Image (cartoon, rainbow, N blue to C red; front, side):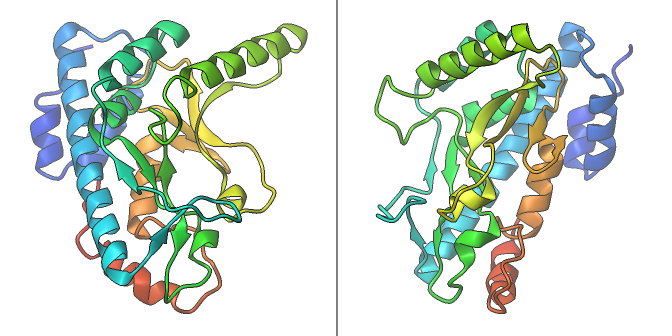
Length: 250
């Protein structure tokens, strides 16, 4: 398949939805080197824009007096955004070796964005934790070194393969990336949000309460300032309005 001219330049000019549509239509086709390089450049630019959005949200929330904390009774303070570490590239390589293929958008996120945890409490929005605040933790920087995520993922992958051997209709493997919206609020919930793997497509599938392309999920979340779920609190609209002012579409 011939590469459409200038995916990256068209993306930067604002033809983002059309570019993503064309890239997704490639499916799991093995791209020619030049196609793959340009597709990755688009994903990297998406990740840079996402990181800019996250930094803007964190700055605004911090100015508001927001407390970023763990999703438990202790509410231990948490760093909301940890940029990629020196091991990020190696971690992406390990994921590719373990699963055979990972989406380019996942790779770009790990290498450029890092780990994000927006769970917490807003002083003017008491139910902010119930609005499904954005969490994407792939490198596992909040966990003790050596404990996560490789060992946990290895265990999850082994358990999934055992279940798959007994029941071929067991379902697809999901690489955990975030607690679900109930666990974020510190109540009993469902399965973690995450990426369907293996997946050799440009934009991966992200499973939350349904399954959608990862960039579509991010655009929805950013359109709501990082808090996409209605919380039933009238104050949420003023907070969200401030948060979305300078955010970039992906």
